[in-house]
Length: 189
Image 1 (cartoon, rainbow, N blue to C red):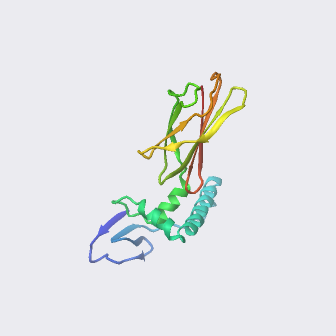
Image 2 (cartoon, helix red, strand yellow):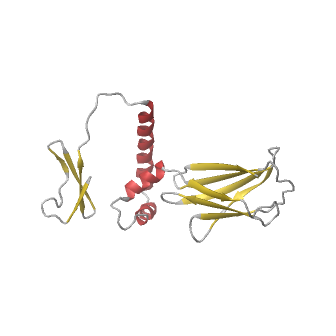
Image 3 (cartoon, rainbow, N blue to C red):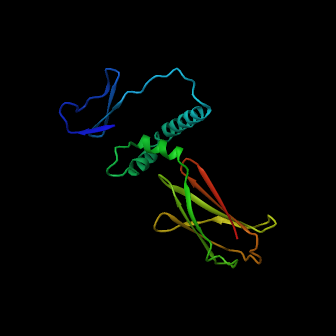
């Protein structure tokens, strides 16, 4: 894909030329790419699943961008060097779930006030991160929300209940983004 800025020949040009090149305008730039090719092959199950997911992303995006505040939020999420529109950012947000990179259990010893630090990222924004602590027998010790830290990627859960036996305990982290994508990660103590 080629990008052209401030070229008097391509400025404002959009559409398909000769069935081989596609021109489109994004901001002040002209984007040139090869035209898509038609195929007679049936899509695979994986391709159909991807097409359905993309269709759901487009429906989500159209609904979200009717709200001026949400549209402004997605527009504010653009990087300076990016040609991506609010629409493209919202579609990508729908498709990509949050990533849980790290679960730091070193400060959790089973006492009220102990903390668990979780590093979570998303291509747009993580809305919430929760922690569930279960004993080895499956009984729930506690469950609650972690608090986003000033760096924007770390979340800290502070225990409110004592946990007498840590052996075999399971810690489950759940991270959710704006479209409702959920990522879950579990650790055993």
